[in-house]
Length: 116
Image 1 (cartoon, rainbow, N blue to C red):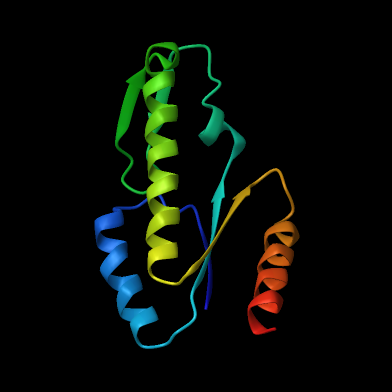
Image 2: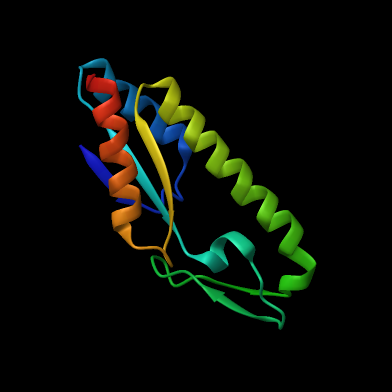
């Protein structure tokens, strides 16, 4: 099973679900997609963040929160990668300014090496 997602979710929820799948010999591979601005948080002017799911909003000054935001994203990505690896699941990051083919090619190459 290949899942393409931003995976910006509660990782405490993901881990037991992933363990369930891989524990039953299902092969799982996550391609995590993040936009460049989600990684760099290179915003300059105050603005309103609006949730696409809930329509809740947050007025923010990005310059005040950039460092903490980047650290939180890095921590989340690293924990997600560790959860995947500890559950024998594949993990591949993909920045959305790159073609998805890059991540799929890496996935196929890894699978070819594993089968040899």
